[in-house]
Length: 445
Image 1: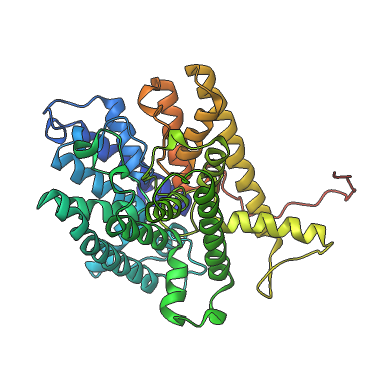
Image 2 (image 1 turned 180 degrees about the horizontal axis):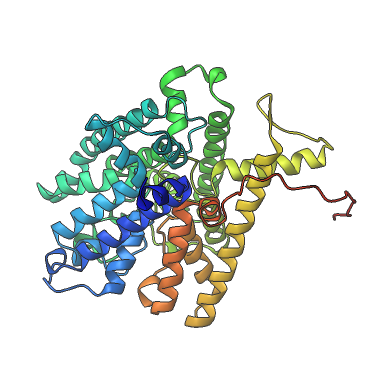
């Protein structure tokens, strides 16, 4: 056995996932630097191409160049491919090509595929991956078809490309848009705040992409028999519903009171859906009240669900944190959902993820505020958007220095691959059972 083979076999699934994303970022950067990728036909700087590539692969949507007015059709196509790779996961896409070629999938590859889509078990992972790829293509195609009338009626034949681009971007929770050439740079979907033909399909695509592939499998298998769903799927659907409904009510009665009732309802629903973690906006976010901005910051940190195209600390993480608090108040030893008990290791992982996200969010936000001399609230909004892979912005990203942009790139990458994936990749378990120290109590609270 040669040394290259031995080294490859020593790579953990977590490290393979990280290397896959890094490889996609590098290739994307090189392609976006080409003159053919920009409308002016000039070479794009390394920093701008790298930032855009990281944002696309990490399905974030934060940009330093307006996607529609700066990037050519070739550049936009490169960004779209990067979004698709990032949304599905580089490993999942690579495995799908192996499956299409009829190659045998090794045990190591199956383990990596399981980690990539957060599948509960390795058994049936090939079948689940095929379902994910097929389901993605079907949903994105239906989404594009649904968006075509709304875009074509306004932009003619050019609306077809806009429909395809926004369908993929919305499903992958990326938040990239190509409306800047028509409605002004960095305008996102503000020209469609009252247009249900555009906003409703995009909202549905965001939600479908954000609930996770395991939940998809439950929906396919059990249809409307909710009692047969996995506990995780029930938690995901419940928390997703709550995190859409409550913010929509708050926005409806607080921030959008001056809008016509139809536009008011659509705007409230859209802006409660998009922070987890799509990054589109149909209204000017800078005009939102302070409490609403804080609420959106929280939603961005929570993000979507495990094994989905979305980022963030995930709905299941926040559910476990809340359930642990409730169990403590009720003096229960176990965390339970829907008549099922959760292993204590899941609660420990949830607390670790929550702490990691919170620390990175606060430290990086404070660092950017000190470096740039900007209000700390705006910087917190931006760092939450980056680590949650959202893409919403209060307009400060383009003004940041290279150091602050580098901080945002690192946050986007960490948010996409996952905090625990990074930890497991570089601090692998040695497989040894550690001896236990003597037990002693400590007072909390």
